Amino acid sequence: MSSSSSTRRLSHPQVRQGTRGAYRLVRTPPAPVDPPRLDARQRAVVDHPGGPLLVLAGPGTGKTTTLVEAVAARIAKGTDPERILVLTFSRKAAVELRDRMALRIGAASAPQATTFHSFCYALVRAHQDADMFVEPLRLLSGPEQDVTVRELLAGQAALAQEGLAHVRWPDELRACLTTRGFADEVRAVLARSRELGLGPDSLAAFAARIGRPDWGAAAAFLAEYLDVLDMQGVLDYAELVHRAVLLAQRPDVADELSARYDAVFVDEYQDTDAAQVRLLGALAGNGGGTPLRGGSRARGTDVPGADVRDSGAARGSGVEQGAGVERGSGA
Image (cartoon, rainbow, N blue to C red; front, top):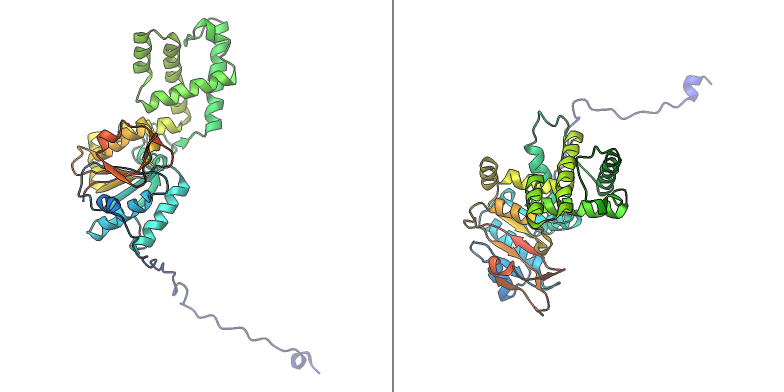
């Protein structure tokens, strides 16, 4: 038997020419979920027509649910989802908010939900000075910042022994310059200064006014630290928010942000620091029709449900963990 007759030839399927790319994946919008039943106070938040609003409530009382419903109500009235910004403090919370809003409104495109730091990075990156920073700005991690601060302090200690240091720490602190504990304290001062919007000059003036030479030295150290960050093309988290605030307060950027968003909501508002509050103020512009919605529990007060208050009055009260805040503007 010949090999040709004993060998079975396997037929191969014909490959159709010209069919490549004929199929494409299409995202199916999620089916909308039934709206939750809201009590009278939650309904008052959802129906708020405009202007700053702060919602105070304890943990588990439905603050985030109310936020989602407020967003859904605005979209139902015609607001473009892309013109709504929701800010929170962790990636996990941002993802959860995006998923809940997408399910609630039944749309493939949900409003932007992001962390404060992600929003600030995008803002700074969009307006980055191309001549100063050839590469994109990189965020400095906590351990990297710790190493940078400790190296600068060690260098200053070495220069001080030679009489060449330009940052003059008080004599009682010089022996501490190379310790981890002192580096941690310096990091805290740097971060708090930027949160309060203080630069090297303003911090030095404040130190001189109250007679604190250690804070005066910290001001000189802050100037050197910021120069090093600029040379390396990196930012720490406090500096990131500080620069975003400065950008948002520029008239041209403020006009751009005002034209981009009709509503801004903040979840877990009690976790905001001074710099983030200034950022929200810049996003609000002149405050026309910009409500602030949120939830936080007054310290020492038993709050069974949500309490709607004027945001200015509520800012002065202490808050506990577990509260959330949403902030938005009237469409």
